[in-house]
Length: 152
Length: 130
Image (cartoon, rainbow over all chains, first blue to last red; front, side, top):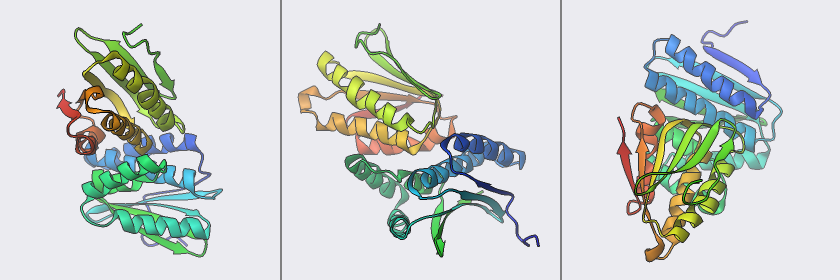
């Protein structure tokens, strides 16, 4: 049965790096075709890229699910993948951390700290700052879903 | 060959090149920085090749031109931050100043470069070219 509120784009893919660029370009053109402002389309495309990079680099996953929903005044981009308990715990903690306080301050803190520690995930703080996004995370069993809501 | 004697960077769709201009040196980044190893390669280029060469040369002003850089992922942005942090770690007499030329018509550049100026306000100025 088809969902009552289906995503405008729904893709299940093996998270291979080379697909990310292709999907970024596709999503941008799709959004422009939906008469969004080019700047908004760029921000949705950037968010798409950063979330998929995150899943590709850090999750122990053989697949990922990408959804783009257009809901009223915002676009909702989500990437779901399987992850270990430790990975899920780390990601939830990180989303909570980068969602605190001013978005620019959180991003700068993240960039400076990550630079020192050689880790990544600055992409999430970037999404929040550059795309004015709200971030959320949910988990069901061994799946984790990162969600970014961007005003359009 | 440029005055810093640096070979260009080519990784995926990203290129980095050091060019001489009349009174300074320009680091020009072009293309898309979204290949898996682009962030690490850019970090290596800027922090381990460009930065030591600039310090050794005694240059005090450098241009960084990203107007042809269509996309830079967060790993690439971190490479730029690492470069700025490397400058800040130098003793005062070895530090240099970067003028970052960017294109306000490219969405990620219009907002995404501001954090760099916050990281190193004494070593970086953003200069929109359009």
